[in-house]
Length: 278
Image 1 (cartoon, rainbow, N blue to C red):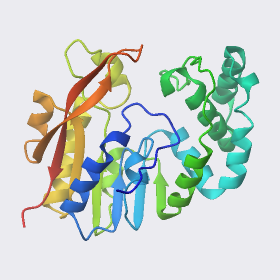
Image 2 (spheres, rainbow, N blue to C red):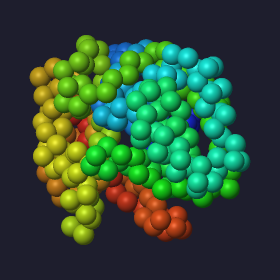
Image 3 (cartoon, one colour):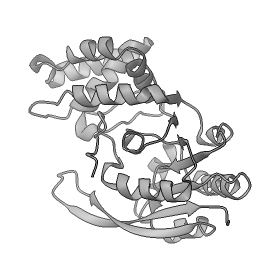
């Protein structure tokens, strides 16, 4: 079995543990596809562990996409500069909060990309969170020695030569899908229970209307344009309803459900495959 490649960023809901499941479905759905389209690329585990000629990788987070573009375009320079931030002196709350202010005040794309990587590795739980004004507000993480992912960044930069990075709304990406493509969607997941804070979830810009709209776009792509679409999400009554036109598989995934990291429960996820009948 080919060794898996880890993303260089920490990312909530990353798909590293599921790449075999996802890849098997993508290949089975479209053996002729030469392009993988990801409207919600996140840390890019599926991209890094799949084998397509071309990739269209999108995310609504401009800082994430800018980081990927800088790394793709000048890997040696960027990795060398970013590494300078990973010193003991900067693994301290005072330094972290100063850099966070610098990041939030900066309009320089290169500087923001370096600081985004620094905060991803030094911030709490690798979270990525902004307030309503667009201010990055993740607190300091208190790690003994944050890891500098040099090897992972070089691997990403090399594979990124096959990729086009975009920062658009998910529905705009469906308009850019070429022929002979397959689409993998990893949207923000629906809340697992009514006690989950729906208001804070909705402020993230992806509410239940968006979930239903994504399912409609998947139907259209598969049944009208013959482009297979795979969507992953929590297994709930709601997701089963909106994905009713897809073939549904349930898989069990280990999840950390406590900030302490000690409480890991298995959660049911859905793999919804939209495929035109042959």
